[in-house]
Amino acid sequence: GAVVSQHPSWVICKSGTSVKIECRSLDFQATTMFWYRQFPKQSLMLMATSNEGSKATYEQGVEKDKFLINHASLTLSTLTVTSAHPEDSSFYICSAGAIAGVVSYEQYFGPGTRLTVT
Amino acid sequence: AQSVTQLDSQVPVFEEAPVELRCNYSSSVSVYLFWYVQYPNQGLQLLLKYLSGSTLVKGINGFEAEFNKSQTSFHLRKPSVHISDTAEYFCAVSASNSIQGAQKLVFGQGTRLTINP
Image (cartoon, rainbow over all chains, first blue to last red; front, side, top):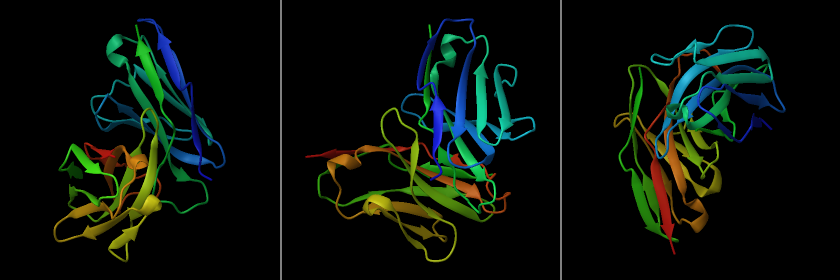
C-alpha cells in the first residue's frame, strides 16, 4: 500500500517552454503532498507543501510564479515548471505526507522525474 | 528549526562486513527520525523510523538504528552488508509537534554506501 507515482519519469524540453509533472497517490487519498528538488549527488530540497483544495506553501527562495503547484484532488498534485531554463534541470520528487483517515508520521515518495532543459 | 548532519559523504565497505552510517541532528523541540534509501534514478524508500518508545529501531533489509537523545544521534547499522545495499542513504528529521502527516522533513546531505566484493 501507500504507492505514489509520478509522470513522466523523464522529460526533455526546450528553454522557454513549460512542463507539467504529475504526482498521484494510487491506493490512498493524500491531503498533503510535498515537492522536492534534488541536484546530482546532493540531498533533497523541499520546494513547497501542497494541501488539497488550497494554495501551496512555498519554501523561502522558491519562485511561486515559476513553479506552479496545484493539488486539485486527494489523489493528484501537479508541478508546472514555467518558462523553463537549463538551470531548472534537476530531479523532481514528490511525496505524500498525510493520508486521509490514517495516522501516519512518514512520507511516501514517488519515483521522481528527471527534467532536462536544453 | 531542525538540521541534520551526516558525518560521512562516502562509506566504502567490503561485502559481509558490518557498517555504520552516522547521523546527528539539531532541534529545539522533540523530533521524529527517519532513514531513507535511494537507488540510482529512483525515489526514496523508508528503511526505518523512530517515533517514540524503544530507542533501538529495526527496519527492512536487516538495518537497525539507535536513537541517542543525549548525543542527538541516530546512527544506522547493519551487521553484514550485501552488494545490493549499494545506494545513497539519507537521514531525516521532522518536528514531533507538527500537524500529523503535514510535518516537513529536513534531510541530511546523504551518505553514499559502496559495497565492494
